[in-house]
Amino acid sequence: MTDVGNSPVFKPGPDAKLGEIVRHAMPWSSRLKLPGASPFEMLAAIFLVLLVLIALFVDFIPGLVSPKLPYGDFSALPEWSLNGLLGTDDIGRSIFSRVLYGARTSMMIVAISTTIALVAGLLLGMLAGYYRGIFERAIDLFANALAAMPSTLVVLAFVAVTGPSVVTIIVVLGIFDIGTYARVAKAGVISQSNRDYVLAARAMGATDGRILLKEILPNLIPALTAVMPTLMAGLIITEGSLSFLGYGIPAPAPSWGGMIASSTDLLSRFPILIVGPVLAIVLTVYAFNTIGDYLAQRLNNRERES
Image 1 (cartoon, rainbow, N blue to C red):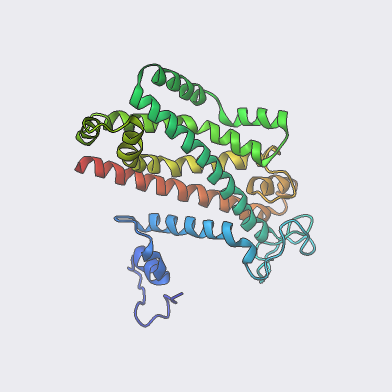
Image 2: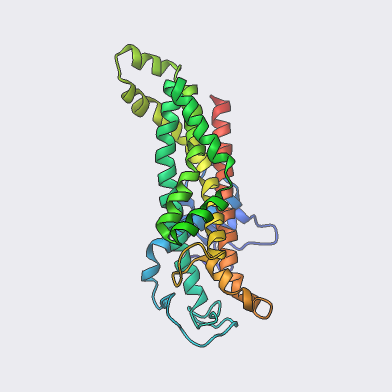
């Protein structure tokens, strides 16, 4: 990594732009192809890339202790060591380690829930937009019913009945986002169905399945990608809320919301205990929303140009 302050090539002064500092401090960030992105959007993208890498490879970080086992005595004060950067919790576990492993938990839930919602919503939306009629009415009714339900309360009810488990949380969270993806997919199919390339495919005898998968589906990807980060941010908040209320990831598995909940009794005397998980949630949600806004703007610009 380049040392910006001591680099003989680049010495930022008081008027240096944030984008220049980011590019020189992290040259590899230029490989993130975000045309027209602001410095904050670039930082959000870099943060999400790092978060995914942490979630995938946290087990291989040298010297990082287990998030489930005590590391030392309770200490709310940071130490100049990898595992003591954020202190230890009330039973001596490394808060820094738990924050990093909590990233894996959150990213896993978000990734699987999003996959469930995207696949199901895309299938339903494409059927509704292409065949219309009873398919459209039934799927619109399903999407409206999901939108009318308070997701957090419904998830709490399911978890209260079945007991806290990762599978229950993933499935229920995934179901609640199906309606949004279905609406986006349906709108895209309706707008594409009468385009020249679709009419030409029909005239050449292409089946409905081929038209949907080969002709229309590729044109739905930009719109679906634009809404995905914002929905992921919502999943982070919901999962954190469930864990905070005690209905999320079962202990002792690390989760950001659960870490905040376990520190509430000591919060008045040791507020630093929640700094790590709170920052992790805030920065992750901000990064997802920022990238979502960027993709939505790019999509709008593309539609105006076409």
